[in-house]
Amino acid sequence: MVGDSATTTGSELKNDRYLRALMRQPVDVTPVWMMRQAGRYLPEYKQTRALAGDFMSLCKNTELATEVTLQPLRRFPLDAAILFSDILTIPDAMGLGLYFETGEGPKFKRPILNRSDVEQLGIPDPEQELQYVMNAVRSIKKALNGDVPLIGFSGSPWTLATYMVEGGSSKAFTKIKKMAFAEPEALHALLDKLADAVILYLNAQIAAGAQSVMVFDTWGGVLSPRDYKLFSLQYMHKIVDGLTRENDGRKVPVTLFTKNAGMWLEAIAATGCDAVGLDWTIDIADARKRVGDKVALQGNMDPSMLYAQPARIQQEVSDILAGYGYGSGHVFNLGHGIHLDVPPENAGVFVEAVHQLSKPYHQK
Ligand SMILES: Cc1c2[nH]c(c1CCC(=O)O)Cc1[nH]c(c(CCC(=O)O)c1C)Cc1[nH]c(c(CCC(=O)O)c1C)Cc1[nH]c(c(C)c1CCC(=O)O)C2
Image (cartoon, rainbow, N blue to C red; front, top):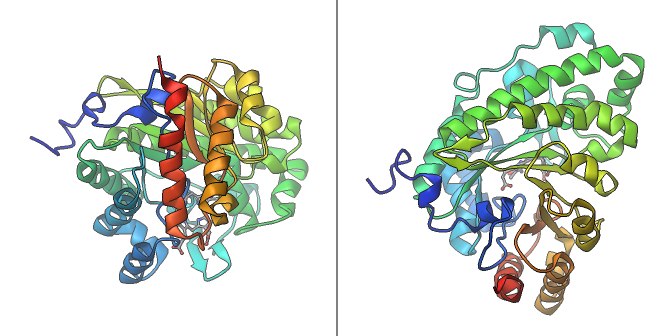
């Protein structure tokens, strides 16, 4: 039965170069996808979001979440789809009351203030409180019909904790750092609970059909090197150890992304993950020298480069490809999410350039 998610196994993918590159197996061209590829820079996304009413209603509507996941793939020859959802679904399911205020980003009605708040948190059952996410995974997987792999994702415990303790986005992270240094046991209890929740959540996404998973640690880079290991990396390591790494007879690769963490690459690569996501503040040539063949690398064009003229975008793609050099093990991406006012045509120039300009690096 064509299109039945039960029969569309990883090995039957029409385009598997994203999974192959993560496993450092030979590819014809360098695969590419864009962080936040489904989003407000696309007029069709804005239309569907208006139909849903608000962002969380869009995430919770299986049909519309499937539609917005596929939108960027209809426009551009991307090599992977990413589940349309958000990292804050876990704290929302824990009862913190997620809401979005226009122009201000995410907020929580009931932030975590102390140890007793942490102790009262339950670990969400992925097929109960988070079933809408699993339904989206199953629906997207079916709709993809084996064209490209589906990426599942979660936030890292530290990054989720920053939103839960700060009550929303933050610039200085004073509340969570106060907890880290004044009440470290409370924060460790929270991070440990979150790591358990993330393991269950990602394993459920894998069981529902995700062929690769990524952990977003957007805020690990605001810590000192020692505290990064203590409060962020340690818990990502626990997640890597707890994940189901195989599905349908095929390896499920795991990518860890910490923004602003170029200086800690070796430590991230040592967790046993398959790939490390890089932001644009590190030279990918240096990154490859430092990790060798231990892991694949994902990245790392500055998302603001998509405001440039086509020739400048192509030059940047060419420079990053040359920096990585010959052979597999590179998944091209932006170093962070695409900006909401980027012209969609420029994203098209970027994706085409990766495929066209990477050919010479993969000839036998
Ligand atoms: C920190 C973080 C969040 N969410 C996410 C992260 C980690 C990656 C990163 O650092 O960007 C991850 C995320 N959020 C979203 C995805 C979808 C998949 C994709 O296309 O990449 C993914 C992978 C959709 C989204 N998540 C959000 C939007 C915009 C919501 C809208 O349509 O209004 C989308 C498309 C909302 C969101 N969600 C979050 C913030 C800070 C915001 C507000 C940002 C803004 O308003 O631009 C938390």
